[in-house]
Length: 96
Image (cartoon, rainbow, N blue to C red):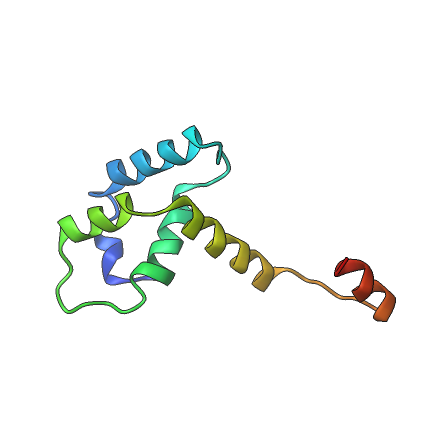
């Protein structure tokens, strides 16, 4: 997924690294830069503005809330999961 924002990625890498460090300090060690970038592209920047400004991109990165990212990552994981249940009993077991 290429977006207009991708041309700024190298410039905003320090802000991404800072946000990843914040996540690590809060116990979310498995979050990667690519995951944050995907979150930004799919959620924050899904409607591209006419003019992209560097300071707004940095503000968006530093403003990411852990809960918003975790919700996004969970939904994305469910979208890609291959869950095949054979019968009603398996569904009931899953929904316990």
